[in-house]
Structure formats: C-alpha cells, structure tokens
Image (cartoon, rainbow, N blue to C red; front, side, top):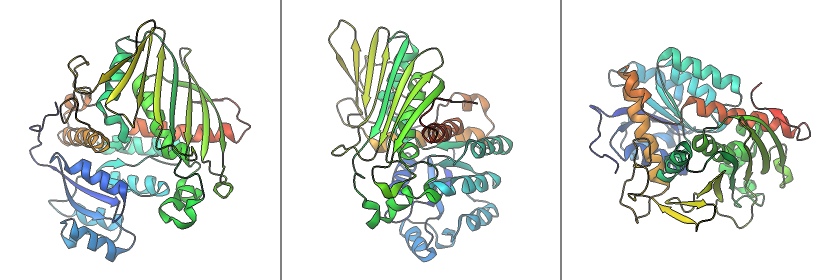
Length: 392
C-alpha cells in the first residue's frame, strides 16, 4: 500500500505558472501535489490577467503578496525570501514551456512541466544540461504512468513473462474534436494554432502519452519511424488531428501508434498492447485497474490492481492508495507521480544521490523523447511519409 507516513522534514515549497481558474489541468496538478502533504502551494502566477490571477490565488489560500503578475516577477521575488519557493509546475501553452522552464532552472528551482517539454530536441537538451549544472530536476507530467497496473505490465516484460517482445500497438484516439469546436472554445483554439501548440497537435498532445507508456513498459529504443498525418478539419492544417505512426525498434520488434481527436464516439481509447513470443498484455486507461494477460493456448486472465498475485516492488506496482476492488483512477496516478517528484526533489536538495537513483519518475529524458517523437513524425509526414532514423 501507499505509505502515508512517508513525509519530508518540511514539505516542498511550491508554486504554479498557469493553471488558473477553470483550468482542468491546473486543478489536476494541485489535487495531486497537495494530496500527501509533500508539497505546499505558497505562490503562483496563475493568469495573464493579474487581477483575476490574484483573486484566484487568494481563494486558494495564498498570501496576496505572493500572487504575481508574471513568472519572471515570481522567480525574482521568491529568490529574495528565506522561505522562497523550491519548485514550480508549468501548466501553460506549449510555446512557453522552454522559456519558463529555463528561467525556473536559472532561478535554481525544480520543475514539473506539462508535455511536450519543448518544441525541439535542441531546446530539450539545453534544459537537460542546465538542470545538471544547477543540480535541479525536471519532471514531465506523463500523468498516466502513475497507474499501478502500468508498472505491473513493465515488471512482466522485465521478468520475461511475455518472452521476446515482437509487437507493440499503442493508441490514444478520442472523438471530442471531430468538429471545429475551437471556433467557440479558446481553451482548444491554442492547441490547433502552430504558434502556441508547436509543429503538431494530436501527436504532441496525446500521442506522446501513448508513446511514453510504450517506452516505459517495454524499455525498447526506437530505431526508425514512418508517419502519416491528416487534418480532417481543414482549418487545423498544417496541424494534424489524426496520425498513424509505424515504428521499428532496435532488436527487431515493430509497433504502431495511433493518435486522434476525431475518432467519433470514442471517449479516450488510450490502449497499449504488448505482444511477446509467449504471451501478450493489454492495458486500457478507461479500465485502469485491470491488465489483460493472454498466454498462448490458455484462457485469458484479467489481473486486478491491489491483489497479492501481482509483483510486489517499490517502483509502482504496490503503490495502491486503496485496497483491491475499489476503483483508483486519474487523480491517484497523478498523485503517485507527484509523490515521486517530491521525494526526488528532496533527495536532490540534500545531494543524496543514492536515494535519488532509487526513485523512478518521468524525467527530462522522457521529455526529450516526447519532443523527438514530434519532430520525427513531422519530418516523416511532411516528406511523403518516408522512413526516418529516430536518432540521427
């Protein structure tokens, strides 16, 4: 079970950039970070409208003087305080991630950033180097990677339960943007605007989630990929609202990735199926407490979260917040990640490299690969869907 007695001497003093009033993502970050008492929200630059942001901050219980008009003002003022912030979460449009993350690292803050981390791998590598120089950590919010059954899948692959991995099919294909809803929805408009979203829409927005689960569960490296993408809502061009990616992995395995916002009638359809020489597993985020396990020649099995027959480890399988049979979900997954971020940030503050090395989390390397996926998919799709090397 999750250890609610695992506290820090003092909670991490924490702030947010973006994620203000009405933001579902902002609420998700706060709900997750504050759940276990490992973070304390003490400051914020929540909104481009300073008055609205200040009113929101006060309603959250933050001192008015620590509600800032801009992130630059916040980083500068908090650095002068003995009780200044130690970490910041960035929940803003994609185009701002690099600039804000860089400024946070320069202010010697740990960072939790929404994905994609940056527009280019060159920028992501800059952040990685800066984080190392400042002895700070970057966590990337791949929020579905905190589910215990995803970690069970990873352990099954690691322990050879599936045999040699041959095929991976990953997808995140919802239907909520099957029409041009952005005409009347500013919160969607930026996602389909290149200047704010970057070179991709669904690949960066949801495809990176599915891709990270593939990386995390299989621990295989992509060798090359081939992508085709479409803008079924023509006004979204050149950004895609549907994409199919074929993957070749080092060692001979192959895979596919489907990212879509126009899968009409679908809620999420975020699934990953890993096929080995002996057996297969499949996880679906709409049924996150179950993992389907299929051994050739035997009846399929449904493995349930929280049960004694699962692998017991300290990396995620055993990180249950309630006993088996009760439904855990999205917020629990996010909270599991924020608990890891807190312990990692604390270990870095104490320069405890042994403790830090023992903590799994989606870090800057995960952010780099998500950015690389976007870059390479665009390169392939915009050149007639030709195969391209994943790493040059």
